[in-house]
View 1 (cartoon, rainbow, N blue to C red):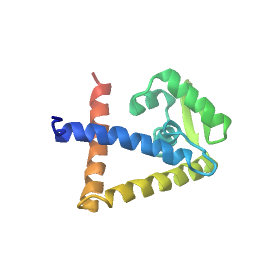
View 2: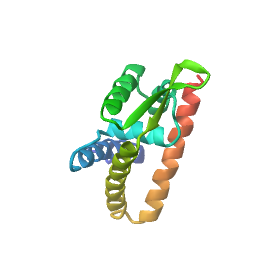
View 3: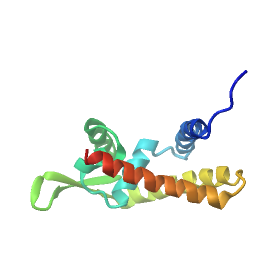
Amino acid sequence: MIEPLSARQAAVVALARVARMLERTLAQQDPPALSLSDYRMLSAVAGGEARASRLSARLAVGRPAVSASVDSLARRGLLTRHGGEGDQRAIELRITPEGDRVRAAAEEALGALVRDIAGRTPDAQATLAALAAFGEGIEQYQQEASTR
C-alpha cells in the first residue's frame, strides 16, 4: 500500500512540477526569448539588484553561471554592464528597454499560468497570498544564508 504524501512532501512535489511548467511556459513564448534562469536574472536586475557580484547569492547560483547568463543577456541586448561608481572592478547591470519588454512579457505569461493553477484550488486568493508569503520566506532564508 502506498502511503499518502505528507503536506511537506506534497509541497516539494508541487514545487518541482511547477518549476517545469514555468520552464515550458517560457519555451512556448513566441519567440521563446527567455529561459527561467534568464527571467530570474532580468527580474533581479529590474528589481534593483544591480551588482553582478551579489546576483550569485540572490539567485542561489554560482558566479560562473551568473557570468555566463550576464554575457548571454548582454549579447542579446537585454542587459548592459557599467563600471561601478567609485570602484571600477565592480560591475553594475542595467536592464535595457528591450530587456524590460521581454521580462514583462515573460512575467505576464508566467503570471497567467500561476493564476490558472491557483484558480483550481479551493481559495485562489489565499493560494496566491500563500505563494507571495513563501517568496518572502525565500528572501529571508537567502539573506540569512548569505551571512553564515
